[in-house]
Amino acid sequence: MEHDNIFASGEESTLAVLVSLITPEIKEHEALVSLEELERLLETAGGKLFATVVQQRSLPDGKTYVGKGKLCEIASLCHDNGITLVVFDCELSPAQIKNIEDGIRAEFEEDESFDVRVIDRSMLILDIFALHAASAEGKLQVELAQIKYTLPRLMGKGKDMSRLGGGIGTRGPGESKLENDRRQLRRRIESLERQIAELERARKVQRSKRDRSGITKVAIVGYTNAGKSTLLNCLTDAGILAQDKLFATLDPTTRLYKLPSGREILLTDTVGFIRRLPHHLVSAFKSTLDELRYADAVIIVIDASDPEAEAQLEVTEKLIFDLGASGKPTIYVMNKCDICDKSSVLTFINLRNSHDEIIPVSALNKSNISALIQALEKLALNGKSINIFMLDPNDCKTLAFLYKNATVENVEYTDNCVAVAAVVDEKTLMQVRKMLSQSKNGEEKKQNDDQGSSNEDSDKGKNG
Ligand SMILES: Nc1nc2c(ncn2[C@@H]2O[C@H](COP(=O)(O)OP(=O)(O)OP(=O)(O)O)[C@@H](O)[C@H]2O)c(=O)[nH]1
Ligand SMILES: [Mg+2]
Image (cartoon, rainbow, N blue to C red; front, top):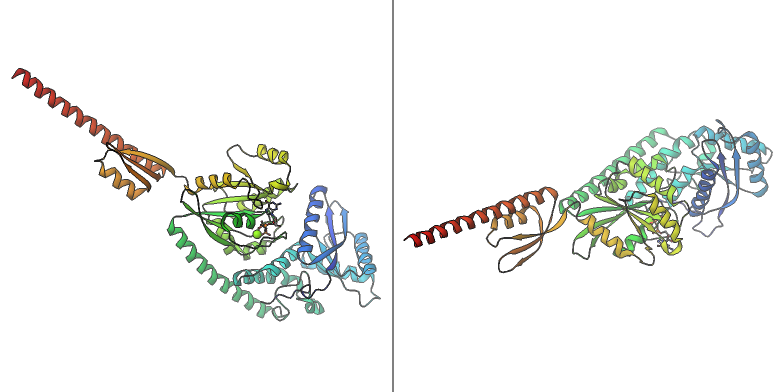
């Protein structure tokens, strides 16, 4: 799939008006933070903010989201300044998009050249995904999400179909792919789903190979731009593109990481999360996001320098839960500590459960990475523990049992014992302890018997 990018040719950024509502449901702070994020999304898509329009209402207008007066204000703002793009910070229904576009145009009916494109937050996010998709799988997933999301919003809009592929919110499947023919589109969706399923099978085979290796799989997750890729690069020289952009990473990258103990883990960098992630995108990226579902543990990367860190963590944890991947052992990495206030990190740490593993680091400067590595060593044990068992040199049975049921890391022979260092799970540990106590009892009994018989002998001798 080819992506049209009107900015690649060096054209100037598209100026846009961003629109948001404050309602009893959406509090002012939340609306403004989300709007700031929308501006970053717009910039990532290659656009530029011209103005923001915020309205306070008790409810969104069913037909046009904002009220009639605000729509006139937006129309004038666009008409007087040559603005052609309006982005609403919400999810609009296809009918709402049509009503808003018609309403804006109707204000300046006499001006035939006046044309404004209206998109919503989800379309902007889909647009960025279309722009950043690199692998075949990523491209197919984006196209599927985009067709499913954009299609009902573009059907039956006549001349608007010609806008496809022309700019922000319309990138991805080009005009030829989105024909105004439902049957053909249904076939396209089927074909995309088939191709994705095929790639999913390949991913499954890869995953089961990794499962068989028994190596602990750790997924690196977190809000977009938190520093996930930088962290994986810092640990493994993975060479992933890390950028001050939203959704720089779409394709998961897995690297084998050898810990100082010699134990190995698999680290996977994943696609970032954001508030109000379009659900078509989440379902289209299911096979990619499965990397998280099948991981043994997770590292949640938090941008500690962002005043919204706590809220971003909430979004991340909610998405992990929605994806059915919660409850795994978790390391919380407070990243970007080089540019943040120490006290805010401490406040954050105090807010969390005391049993959470929270590690402040700077992935960029590689500071405090040793603490993270220590925590990874614990994860690599995967609920198992490392123990040193002192075996009788003749106790071949326990030694064989350890070789069979545990990972023997070291064996040292001394004159009267064998010290075996082994990684064991709880069940094996109990079994080995039982075997050792049995063999010790047996040994003691044997010694007592020996002692008894020698006493008898001496008695005999005495008597004799
Ligand atoms: N100051 C500072 N910047 C960092 C640190 N870690 C990452 N960054 C910067 O933050 C930006 C985002 O980093 P990425 O590693 O791409 O973030 P990500 O979480 O992979 O982002 P997406 O893939 O887009 O979701 C880049 O500009 C990094 O250089 C850090 O410890 N300190
Ligand atoms: Mg990344």
